[in-house]
Image 1 (cartoon, helix red, strand yellow):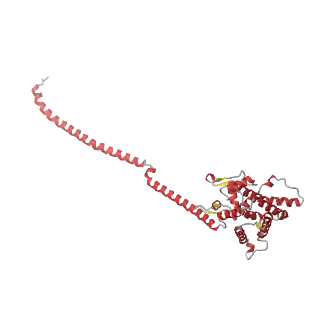
Image 2 (cartoon, one colour):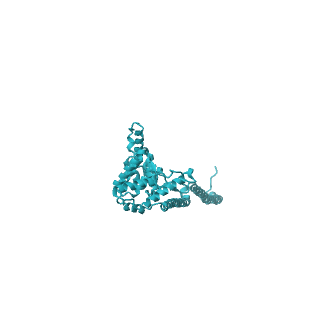
Image 3 (tube, one colour):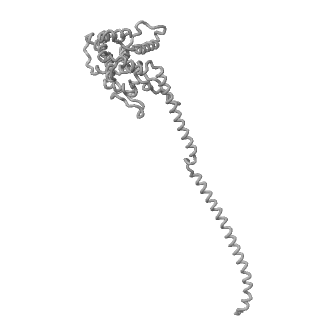
Length: 344
């Protein structure tokens, strides 16, 4: 077996080193190339990840925050629209109230002056007049008469009570409302377009008594009671007619109570004689678009609103236990004091 010479190994080592170095260099270069290309790939991956996150953020955006400006402007617009509608509605009500005040036959101060001028026209005189009316008219089944007939009876009784000089002072104010009512009834009668028939100037006794109450110098409670008694005169007339025909008297416990129709008629009479404040007579119409409009309510509507209430929680509650049927004196008092009627 040949022996290995150390010199030969030494001589061959440089070649071996020389041949192996390029490989080392190539590996180094390759490694360097690989290492330099790694950051580029990493940057692209990071960029892709960032783009994906941004896209996800856009997809997950808040609708409220994105449209905050539009929502704010819309809210401002709605508030302005509500204020405009409320202002128009209020102006409509105020205009109607002013129109009613200008068209009123009597001013509240005139009514006050009328009562002060008739300080001798007390409850005693009133009761005497009512008794005479019952004897001369109600006992004969007469529920309406002309204004001259009514005045003639009133003047006769007043003279009998306190002498020739006793009369209704400032009676022209009472004449004014009666004449206006006669004209209104004539205009509303389509059958008498060219004129009025004989007897058409008769007025219900309840209206004539309501007109006379303008001059009554008394407390509010006494005035309410005499108006309530005036409504019951119709019940007495029915009882008288039943007795004259030989029929048994009704045992109905409501004979001493005013009916729903009588109360509505009396409120209409107070409305026609300017004894209700204008603001209480204003009711809403069915026209609510673009804003609420108003009109003057009838006696029936005012009575119903007072008894049953209106407007829900923001309106007024009913003042009577029953929204329909007979009305007691206490109920009538509550109706006239309610904000929907508001007499005197």
